[in-house]
Image 1 (cartoon, rainbow, N blue to C red):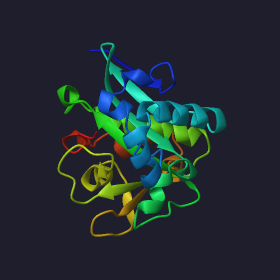
Image 2: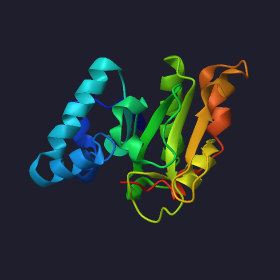
Image 3: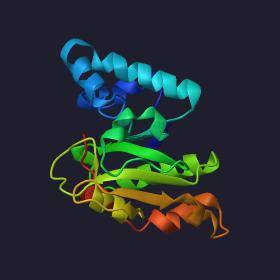
Length: 205
């Protein structure tokens, strides 16, 4: 079984699951999202968002292919590009962190370590770009696919709670911790994340 990672671009955006391809939960504020769903084109809004972030900031996601088929993906960006963050009770995201927005592993590929690979790929990309940390809003009551990642998944891959909440705590992964081990970045991140198996929780939309 072969695996290949690729950055999300306009060329492969259609490889996201159809529901995710049209989802603008993070990309728009709640009012704009409701308007787009009612009278607009969410898929076009998604495309415009990806284009804007790529031009202004750079890579904002990874797609993982297994034997040529898209099996999993993750998206991330500075919080200023994710208006939805303002609606969370544990906002704002720290100024030195990038937001892990959402992730998805398709049902047929769960349990194969793909969730860990996604976090490793994101962490390595951001470390090389000088980012100090990744933060995410977790869902304490996660029971089915959604745009907010489950708390137990985040804890499993090394995140720590920095602002508790009964439903949506904010968690953080310090990337400088890996670098402080004085090892190659990839080896350090493998040590930090390699033993985790979060796929049980990572079945997101």
